[in-house]
Amino acid sequence: MKDTPLSVCERNFIIKALGDKKRLDGRQPYDYRKIRIQFGADRGCCKVSLGQTLVLAQVSCEIISPRAVRPSDGILFINVELSPMASPAFEVGRMSDLGVEINRLLERCLRESRCLDTESLCIISGEKVWQIRVDVNVMNHDGNIIDCCSVAAIAALAHFRRPDVTVDGSEVIVHPSDEKDPIPLSVHHMPICVTFSFYEQGKYLLVDPTDKEEKVMDGKMVIGMNKHREICTLQVSGEMLLMKDQVLRCSNIAVVKVTEVTELIQRALENDRQARLSGQKFGFAESEFTESILTNHLEPEEIQITESRMDEESEEEEDMNGDLNMEKKSKVKILDHGVGMIGEGGTSTWGVEDKEMTEELQKEATVTQPDQKVTAHATDGNLGDDSEEEGTVMLNLDSVAEEKPVRSEKMGLPNSKSKRKKRKGKS
Image (cartoon, rainbow, N blue to C red; front, side, top):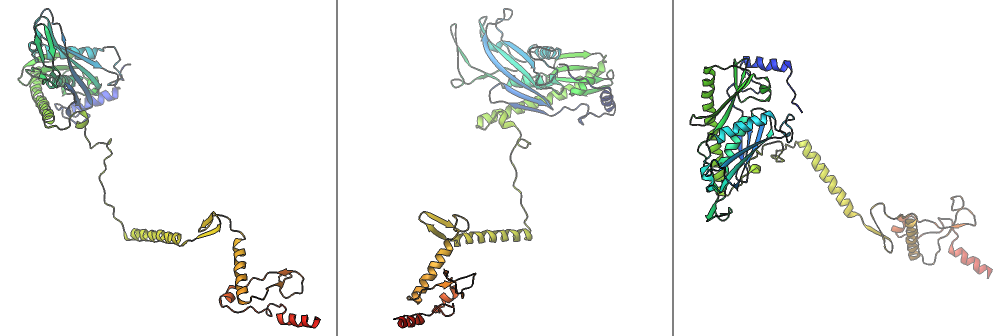
């Protein structure tokens, strides 16, 4: 899959902004983006971010046979991988032209500059030597991959520790880290690449171009240099012609940038060493920023409650307390064996209350007048009628509470004395 090219309007806008000495991200022409160096928990693991460009480098070692040309020298091998995760223009298992260019440039900058002492990697001359392998993986591409890869590779080499070995005749014993401390590599200097992009046939010059600026440029020049002003590599590509003064100007700028980046690498190495010695936490997880959108931490805030709000809350509390008190006052009413009711609802009580009330009234009536029977004739709701139907009369609770004897004359019932007289007459 090929990368999406820029439109004519975008190209003209970028070039016009460069004429006004302005860039898309607000930087000055000779400014680098923010560089951040992080080391992993394992030795030789380094992650470098240059703006949005992200590169991960890992150093490993193994014992192999040396080359016939240099039997007492170790081997430094560099491998660069451009994954599709970094950009849709990269393909899996196929090295692009940019990948080949970066790989060869790093080999010239690191291996041919003798920044690493390969003679110290020899175990047995002509038989066994250490091979140091540097795997550089580009995780995100936003321009200037060469500079980011060079910083990650040299920082990972300076952070790496190889195991200690003991030679007993022709036998080589490799000691683990818990038996003997690992040995650091002999890094003499730190060559770092600085990329310059040219526009309008060298009329405009930029340091650390972004992805869009690289698509517009006419050509670029990469200078590999250390802080001792020694040029390790120089490469010019593109359709442009450069004057001698332009090359000297770029070399003077590269000295300043290389010195700043070298100090940043040494400071990061020292911070990691102090963290490991003091027992503090280290690694990628501990070096991430906590003030990001991905964290769940939230600072507590004060809430101002107005008087009306406080009154509403007090009323709500009173209502809640009132409901609780009502619940406390509710009694359990036993309807039958194994059946109970609290408050409203529960088992159906239809007809039960009337029956209980009549039983209570009858008991009261028998207590006041044990010899009387309370009966009445009821027809169409009138108690004083001569109907043959008999009905039970509901007594008033007030009269029962006052404990007054129930008089049958008021209800229109025959008196007990008149009944006795009639019985005597009959007899």
